[in-house]
Image (cartoon, rainbow, N blue to C red):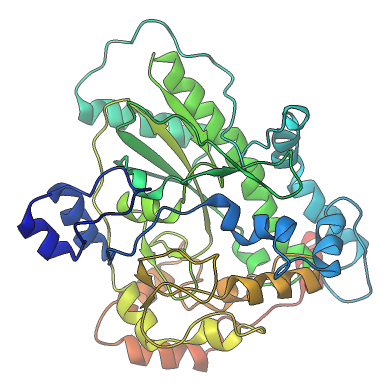
Length: 412
């Protein structure tokens, strides 16, 4: 890396050993477009350090509540509170059915697809490569396939090994020991897929009922991402289908033009606000790469603390973005808003279900099928943002709706 690039980026000459090579000029330019601030302290993330894996080996996270939280996914403990009845847990567990089936099919061999391991695909890679039109038309065709198979959002960006896990975590050991990650040799491109969560259910967070909005998209994306990867295999190209496994999704989604990073640790999309789950496909299929899309989210989040104020365990940060974070679940060397994952997860385990109050309370959590809400979003990205934040409070947006009201909709 030349001296001028080193000076421009702030990277030190002694780039970390777990990063194969320092980013080139094109990557640095893309980082600037995306608003990324990455220092010489950067290290690739080890999946063993994410809070869900730490729950299995780290005494700072392990507790009886954690055991009860994971047990509730198989043996729910309904209670009288609205949103946590037997009906609510029945919907929650049914929404996860497909994702859990995928995750369980390789368990005997120590494989947990979509969480610790990439998905197996239905179609093997063809021996001969298909004739391709130009990259613009090829990309349009793949996008058409993605939409047909059920993806709500589609973006493409360059493969960047900074965001691939340094190591994957093992499920066949009680301590989630490290294992080698997927072989990414020859990969040039990452397809990012967005799967939107139901607006009405999200408004009922926190509750077991609302958590079904998350489970449904895990199940949707498992089927969708494996089907698209199978399609690419049919063309004779490599395709690794991924959900939570293999690599961090957020940096790729930002680079693929899906949206901007918010204070609530989520990507805010123009189409669905923060209500989106992301999956990804690593491939060598030549496609046109998107550019990052910025529409005022960073500026709005800089004056808004609604998610942080609404967070019961106070796990979300106030103030400007900072490098690093409060514990080992934080990414090193990246300046951003970073939650206290330990506080967040501890609250989840007490609820026995997802929380996502920060998603519900976010001023970007609107129904953008309505033109009035699309206008609202545009104004949030202008000099009127402080007025829009005041208006959001004034109109009561982000308030919790009663889960029982969702069930009553069936009577309408």
